[in-house]
Image (cartoon, rainbow, N blue to C red; front, side, top):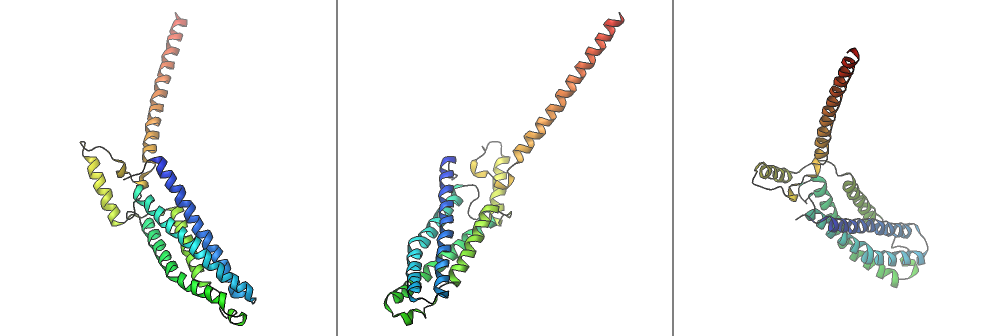
Length: 226
């Protein structure tokens, strides 16, 4: 079912906010992970791990879940669908993988943060940081964002079957056109047809005006000759 325009804009705004928030929270987590890796100060390392735990559970995970849910709403509530276009399918799979890895990794972060709270300064220096996971996760999120912005062409076999079925329904005069039959890749077709029709009317009007002018000139010349 396609959402009404007002609801679609609200869902899109929420999806953009949560997706960008997820990227921002992941970037903040990565900064703390790098600080914990390069710092030699026990207090800095403790604070970095405690901060990573808090950002992970209170920002990264919630934003990731909301981004996934709003993405599903946008997929099922717009003509793009979830399985019709390769870029949507790839973005969905990458988002699922990133969220699964994140949730599985966070208990390790919690355990390291608990160690940072309790062990002595000499042992804290051996904790190091957490760079690989957040760096790879941030790359994945950026790829998903690029896919959502550029929307590369490519229709899945399921999408082609749905498109062919929609064309078959449209070919039947007794079947009214449905909003679900809309194909985003065909945007602009109606505009080009309207422009062509407008151009034909323009040529016809110019021809009529030119003919009327010729008749007027002929009548004027005859009147002067008489």
